[in-house]
Every structure is written in structure tokens, then in C-alpha cells.
Length: 269
Image (tube, rainbow, N blue to C red; front, side, top):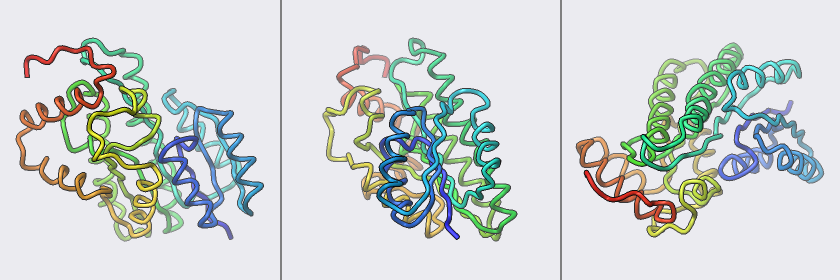
């Protein structure tokens, strides 16, 4: 009997690369993304190239109630989900007093509310079967304060804390929960917060490398997965460096890497 993986944010970037790995590993797929055209193209191509089934649910998870709608649709198909990957996400850039609140509300709904609800709904089913894997995509940002991207960094910190706590709760149930915390990755996300022509490139990696690392970590039942030695070092150092100093360093890094959009004067630091 085939296993099934559900992936959000599956049309591009890390989510798309994870889906490619899973279908090669003989998983049937349920792909979630707001880009209907891209999902339909992926479904047609992958079903022609493999023996696996690809189902799609075009859905914007930043809308209230979207997570429950997805769960109901999957239940109506009578398909048990063996792997849940909460990957969808986006960022905003700018001073908190000047960024768009509606956009930030959508981000909180997506990163926090939708991920939490999908985890709650599918986790209960997995525990009943004594089997399953969940992976939430957070970020290296989860370990740091993020001036000029304050809500994004805070929402990723929530995912880190939430996943670690739930991972502890499910010990002995046959279910594992992993939080993937990549650093700078060459995805469409970067273009939305300042372009992909960053000044500091030696820390960057690619979506396929992040996906491969995350998938292996999930299979091993690793709770916190941080790809890359530099990223791992930053995460560890963040625990001992005072928050005020971390904030200054992160702001300077963001200003340099987002120079395309950075019209904010460097002051009061």
C-alpha cells in the first residue's frame, strides 16, 4: 500500500524540492499551494512520469479556515496522510511602523495558525495509527531577533518552539516531528524581501540541498534540523549572545543583503 505525503507551499522552492524527493521515494502526493496553474502543471507532468498519484488542492492558507477545509477534503478521499510538511511561507521587509498590517496578518495566519491547525488535525490521525512524520519549515531566523523583518522572525521563532514542544509530547507514539531551519536559500521568497542579488552570498544554499537535508533529518526523527555548518554555528551562538547585540548584527546583515529595497536610514542602533 502506497504512503501519502501532504506538502504545503509545494509549487516552488523548498516545498517543490521536497515533493520531488517524496515522489521518487514512492509516495503519493497531496500538493497545496495558492498557484493553481503551477499545481496543475506539476500534477500532469509527474503522473505521466511516475506510477504515483498526485492530488492537488489550490488553497491560500493565509485565509482563515483554509486549514480545516484542507483536512475535510483529504478526509473525504479516505486517504491517510503519512507525512505532513508545513512549508508554505513568505516574508515582509521594512520598519514595523511602516509595513502593511493586512499582509502581516496573512503571514501570522499562514505561519502560525494554519501550521498549528494542520499539525493538530493530522497529528491526531497519526497517533491513532502509531505512525507518521511531520516537518514544519521554520528558519535560522527563529533563533534571532529580526529588525526590519520583525513579524517574520517572530513567527519563525513560534514554529521552532511549537515543534520542539510537540515533539516531546509525541515520544513513544510512533510519530516524529521535525522543524527545518534553513538559512538564506535561493527561492522566490528572497525576491519578495529585497531580491536575490544579495551582497553576502557565501551563506546561501539551494532549495534542493535544503530539501535533501530536511528529508533525511525527518526520516531519522531529528527534532531540530539546521542545514549547513555556518547556520548551525549561528544558531548555537545565538543562545549566548545578548539579544540587543544580536539585533544590531542581524539588522546590519539584513540592510546589506536587502539593499535593493533598503531605503531606511541606518540610525538608532
